[in-house]
Length: 217
Image 1 (cartoon, rainbow, N blue to C red):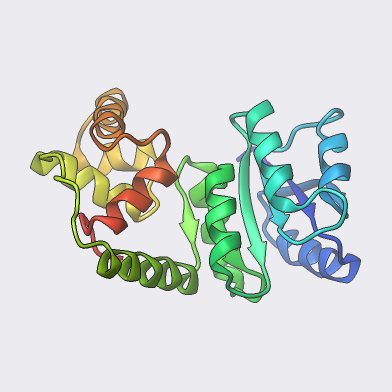
Image 2: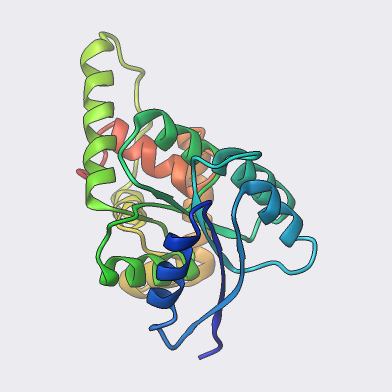
């Protein structure tokens, strides 16, 4: 298969060096560039645009949140995997709103990084188990505080099935194979779901589904 072009963005060179060696153990990965902060990354995009970016969050000059937002705004097809050392609700929310496709802890296992790369590359998303737990806890607390809930739209069984597969990180092609539908039909269902839930991308739909207990994390 054609190699997946990846850029690493982190202000700690020792981490970048180790992480680069780790990712290069995957034969389908090509590291095409590195940056030590968000500004260097944005400058790098003027020369070459990767398919996937592993993005640190807390960096000098331009942090990962702003760099991700500007990159996705300029190159909508770019896929960003946020990397963090510790769980932080504020950073999680900010990165999701910036348009990242995945959110992982830096100490994740090797196979998790492989899953994340493949999921994101095929149009899905990926969250470390700890991230899913944090998101679930946050949303549960929100539900307890919220006395009155808005009336949810009515979903067909097929739409519920597709939402469930989206929340598991599957892309359009994988969903089509599992549901025996065409990719175009899956895209139509997703478009309908975006309208029903008033969301504008897959990540926001996943958050909506967890928040309203349409699926279980």
